[in-house]
Amino acid sequence: MQILYVACSIGYLHSVGFTRKRERLINPMDRVSPQPSTSVQNQAVSESLPLPFLPNELVVEILSRLPVKSLLQFRCVCKSWMSLISDPYFMKKHLHLSTRSTHFNHHRIILSATTAEFHLKSCSVSSLFNSPSTVCDDLSYPVKNKFRHDGIVGSCNGLLCFAIKGDCVLLWNPSMRASKKSPPLSNNWRPGCFTAFGLGYDHVTEDYKVVAVFCDPNEIYSECKVKVYSMATNSWRKIQDFPHGFSPYQNSGKFVSGTLNWAANHPVGSTSLWVIVSLDLHKETYREVLPPDYEKEDCSTPTLGVLQECLCMNYDYKKTHFVVWMMKDYGIRESWFKLVSIPYLPNPEDFSYSGPYYVSENGEVLLMFEFDLILYDPRDNSFKYPRIESGKGWFDAEVYVETLVSPMKH
Image (cartoon, helix red, strand yellow):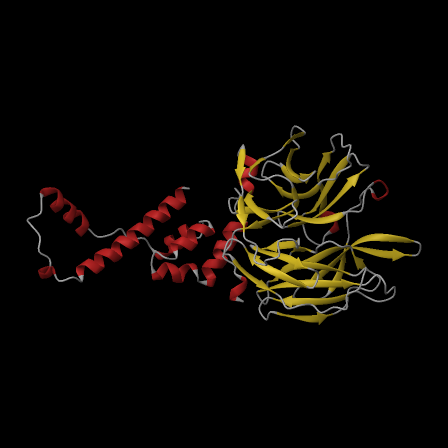
């Protein structure tokens, strides 16, 4: 809040400076006015004083810490600020500071409502943890089909990805109100087929990519076909098939350290193994990431997630606890550790936890249970339900960061 106040003050000084320059261009002989009073003379003296000077480096440091909504407004202050806020270096600096903010002030969660119509809301993650009541904003989804629920694939650097009928994707930055729809995949779809998507970022080419793994269970011996969408070229292209004998579950790939990771099934004789298949987004090569040594016999089929930019694995253990593992150093099996084990309350309808979506600095975990968000505190083993104004009942959720990344600029 203090940074925003300082930025507003700087913006005001810029606008005042522009006004004074404009006034000095007016011929003083064209002005006819009575003798000014003492108060007016004092005001004239104060206005003749030079404006305070702030180095450009300091202005950049201040503005790069502001929320996107304020930056979009400040683009109108002057041409130099418009140029600065649109500059790729500034956008990267703002992205870096936003994603690594210890107070997660720039993090928001998008919520898909459990209603007949496709309705999306967004609220502050920080508010869910720290405020007794949270206000939700209605989001205007760019694709106008209110009776079709498009699935959330994931988020990356402020961009959200939605799968539209399994045939194309939408990249959308709700903070910028900018979006781009991909061309169709044109796969040979038939009943039983599905597509597992994943959104990530290629750090080498600085391009956002969506990977589509097309699976046809009707073809027993065929590999899953894979295509990659480039936001820079707005096109799909085919790459190497998914590894032979491996089939991803119908869940999205999780982006970590330049790779997309899918939970996959690998039949071995009369049994099948649960594995993690990783795709390097730049090299477009596959590898297997080894899971931790967990309780395979007594748990549900694990799912993958991302917390604090680390790969996570989650499962129900004996229907009494929800267990979350985290891989601190990506690709190193020894770095897996059990982050938290969350007990289930008496659950007559046999619901499971979804998520986790976020973990605060003090270890509180944000999840979903029975279509509502819930906070679990492992310090005292307590639960609480965040109160959300004008909203209740959620089908899906995804945490994203407010950034200046626009799908229209690639």
